[in-house]
Length: 231
Image 1 (cartoon, rainbow, N blue to C red):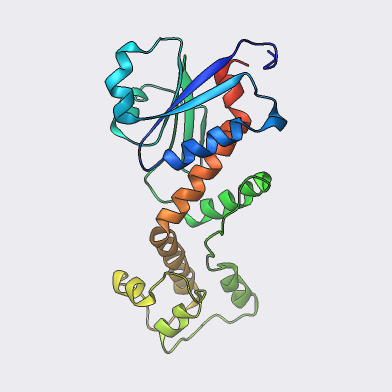
Image 2 (image 1 turned 90 degrees about the vertical axis):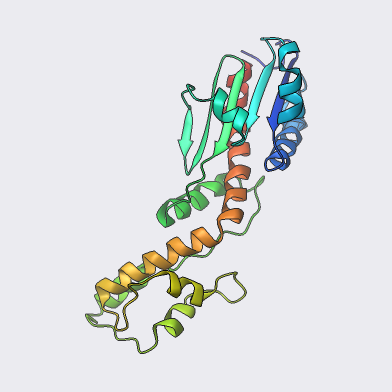
């Protein structure tokens, strides 16, 4: 199927206030002349606009429901997703496609893998990744046979692991964790670093969701759009 020879196609992107910026991003990508999608056009509709006029829309109209709003959740309930990774999901059935980011925060290991994979779209994506604590520092201590690591002030120790200027309050973290040890051993240090990384993910959830949606749009545009539109 050759996109240049196929008949013109139009896609309606249905979104809400939370995802309209990503709908704009997808339209900008679609207008990229280098990809030669001159025969594909798109429009953005808010959820309410779509709901009010849905009965007038042809069954042949391609639609992408972008986000986690009520209408999208109802319509995708029985849709098998073709992509599911890093809390990002998209898939389609017939002329209806769905793309969204799950509400559950990524695990620290998954976030680091996500950032690594994002690099393949380095020419289209630009964002600052959240810096996590390198848990391998514990392995280095273990390799030096330092079996017991004593820390007099755990708040000072944990605070030193965060970059200055980040929106992380170490007092908030320690107050939420009842089991932070006063004397840290190798094993308890490993556990504590995992807690800190998970906390950084939670506290930066809004920024990470932005990163996930930006990546999801580029991924769908690069790997799913033509297939969905049968180009």
